[in-house]
Image (cartoon, rainbow, N blue to C red):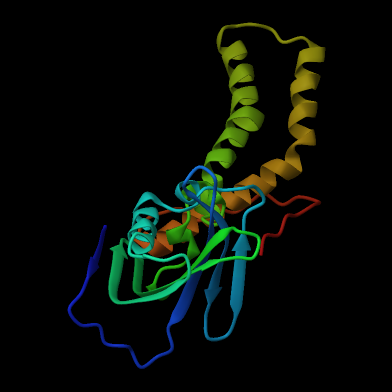
Length: 226
């Protein structure tokens, strides 16, 4: 990541998205995030945190560093600062033309509003990965893997291992395993659909060839994921 000044920035002809970050100073000498606002041509989205969140805990380290750099240029409690040559480039994220407004509110709290042109990327590229905005199939793979292991693979492995060792499962044990799998049938089918979608997504994105076509066995009930 490099947050640096550029000699010349030409405004594109298309209307850019705007990213606005609202902060307030805290007693510890840092900043607390009030909310973020993303404005695009057709919609506006505001994202706030359910708990008091420090700047460094909300944003990626590189974005937090760029925010600190912008704030460090302020010299007064009430000030409007335009950084027209500001440019933050970090992976998929590109922010340009920073505008910073500092004001001392009537309640004595120092507040800041930073506005950037969002040339590329989005909130998932600005906020920490644990914010939950990076959801979707990729974000579900860890929990999905755990569910598959605990609910499907391990019970089946226990049965196969017992048979391989020549252990005779009594009727109660067999019924217990069978009933457990039967009760989980809908969950199993749902998880299979998630895996199928995950594989199709990566096949499309990564041009992976040769993945088999999966077809669930017919059943009286079906799971549909849209």
